Image 1 (cartoon, rainbow, N blue to C red):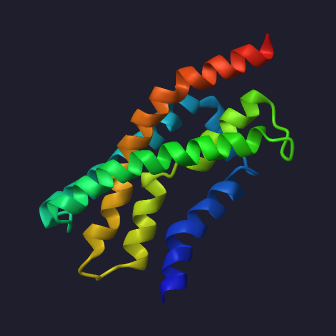
Image 2 (cartoon, rainbow, N blue to C red):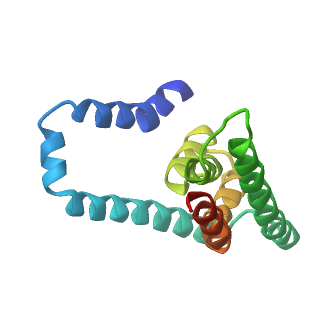
Length: 164
């Protein structure tokens, strides 16, 4: 069923990776970090390429006005989540340093295409609306990069002011 598919596509690779950290493979990874980083990037590129190819051959499953609405709403929602998370992490309740707050904000607000697409594909496999379910995360990925790069100077200024 669905749970076994999710376990095979999500939990098994994570568990296997964590288990390998306790073996001599960790030393092999440490010696060849650049190679494994490039391999990781190539696998991610393959996942993204596959997702975009599937979406454009089958269609995004969205009407034009829905696509425009997503392109307007997603950056606003992402920016709002970044600012909300940053405010939360800087609050007295959490008490994080400016650097910790920035790191936690980006980690908490960024969703990955590499993890999200296999998850959506597994859950909605065979559903005729699968492309429409994948569209928001496919649009969100590049938007996160753009919005993130636009607010980096703001976060850099905050962390520099607090460390001086």
